[in-house]
Length: 447
Image (cartoon, rainbow, N blue to C red; front, side, top):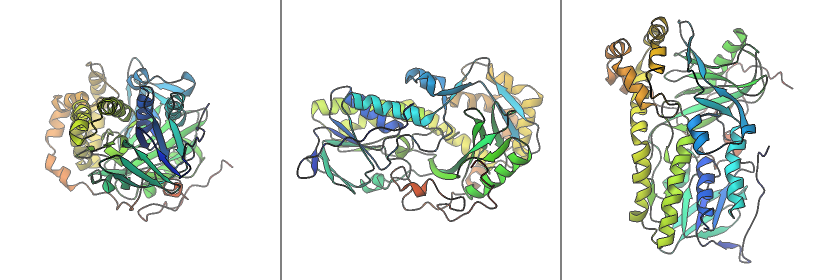
């Protein structure tokens, strides 16, 4: 099973690579799929990433079946299908949400993301791994990309460099306006854990949720999202899982990463497109970004291919990218973000009341069977919850203006992205990019 890709260089004697077409910065889902789309159309493409191993970004690896049907996955990369999740709120019994047929799959993310890179390389794309992009400068004749190893030229550039990339600011398009911190660690799980488990409440993940996801035999991922002190919350969550007998030990080192909750206002300019987490193309309800990144990057490669063929790489021509991806995703992002902010305003009693009502009255089954349920498109389900005679009434008692009181996230370091040194993402148990620490970390007994 591939987990990386070979490094292939193509440089002139001057050390300057003069590509005819496109440089893609970032070898995640968006970057690799953009490269694949362009290379398969015959364009010269190079992908630059600071990492030596592709696809190792932190992620639970849960994707919807719609994603793997539209962007096929090797069956060997699928750990198992997911048709149920147990949701536990503070002070409430666990409620199982289950569908008749699987809605999602738990996958080997690194292998899946790498498969796009391998296919792109088969079509002629060149990968320069282990090079950190330091500067991107568009001009009237092309784009200059400077790394810590050399200088390159292209007709256009796609920034798929991950959340918090300084490159989006550098080209004048700013940064995503809201974000949350995710933290996760691999654990050894108990045999009794055979379904995805979600936990909500301020004692586990204020305003968000924590998870325990079984992956391969005896292994799983435990993590959470929080605006503040995420490592501290993770430590407490792991201790809880130990007390409840759900995990036996911690099998790795906890790590943090940033998750955008709102997209960039503008994702294009002359000779430049921005895609994936760097553009904020992420579901604000769950923080999942693989499918939306693949969809947006598919549009990016189509628009860019046409623009290259027409030799028109102006902002006006490339604006078709933004129009198309926003037409596809904007409603989901806006409705999801509104629901996200409302959820953050709820207290534990309100959250528990909603969960208990859903469980006691069987409302969750009613919602799941009402049709139109989608793992990836949440606006329909959110609408049904708001319109539901019981849950809608309960939500009506909560002033949406309270969402404004939701906590702001911890300060972000100057650079916190896929283009950063590994220590920003893979760190010791006592490290946190905003200065926090994981208190009383569980011992690593996995040897």
